Length: 295
Image (tube, rainbow, N blue to C red; front, side, top):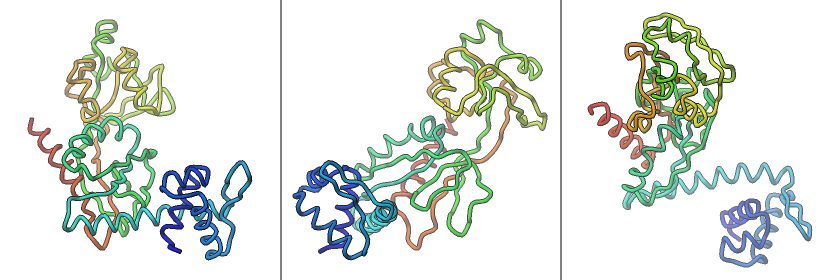
């Protein structure tokens, strides 16, 4: 019996919820799947699954085995794909972690062109929370600088400078007017990224300003929709608002005022070999960003 084949069968049973479902996915019989799971349990020495006539559920040991085994299989597949890529076109899964805002408003606009260039690469975009440390199972992690990141495990390369500015919809400006100074800005309704409808920010010139409004959210799509619909003024980065600025649904106000300056990095695990898919994507992304800065 084959270890990898048996582990793959176990993972598929868990994900499909049944032996029949796993058998269909793996183009085999439920009897063959059952034999592989039984062999796996005998080799490990613990019961992985609880079986009834109606359902299959994991034991505590089974749940632990599933998580660890899935990561190990992904790593093994990555090694296989990297080895094949030496003499062939790059293939395999590229796992990218990013916050919901960075993923949905920044990264996603570059994925289609990249995948057109490398049709045998697949991308899994995983949402993370702001400030969250990247998991080693990720190939790439896009984030602002994380000071507590273990530099022994990860490398970092800068992608772009994040410099936030203020934006509003023409609808909002027509109804409430356009603030011409920071003092006037504080009298307007500000849409707040966060859990509370108020926030203190530091402007680029060092001045601190207290902003408040009637709407706060940690959902980027809701925040940008609120800005476009005229609910208030938005503090964001032009990198996140390319489409809105292009269509005119949002316009920049107070052009000389910026805030929240920081660098956005791409983090990736230190490896004993060069990860082809990660390098290809980073090179592509940097080239696109550099080209856009020139335009």
